[in-house]
Image 1 (cartoon, rainbow, N blue to C red):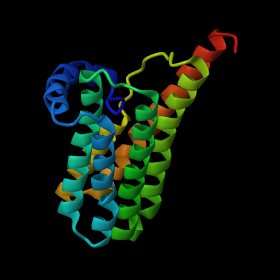
Image 2: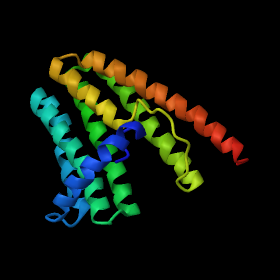
Image 3: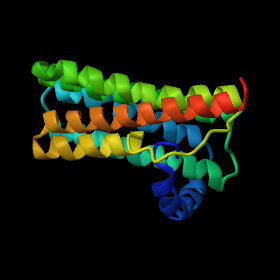
Image 4: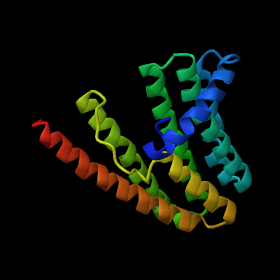
Length: 195
């Protein structure tokens, strides 16, 4: 469950583990949950294009739940794999792309804000992936208020309330702050390792 900040994950993990253990009795392959969640989440953009905002929000929520459960099932079944994590991370980016593209066609005046939200969201994910690739998974921890779970929660609330513009602004600010925090923190971390 890499989509939530560490301080949130610590509280949620025990609950999701129990749910994952129960779900693991029925679904033996966590990738089935990952792929199902992706297809549901990918509907967000087309649903926004068709102006079915509440259905788009529902698809995003269901996709988010699946996204938490795939990792929980993998842990419960002791089936955590690199290929599963790789698949999950890549499909997560596509769901976000569908969301922001959908917003751009639903409200064309928000296209530039949607683009910026997507760019900084990608950079939050990329900075973490890059430092972990350089250090074999080791990275310093930070506050990470712009993590994916928080970004999607903000957009869900904003779409439900009809304040998509403000949701995008908040996502841009949080994602930019988290990216800059990681950029500085990880750069110093790598410099300390003399690499």
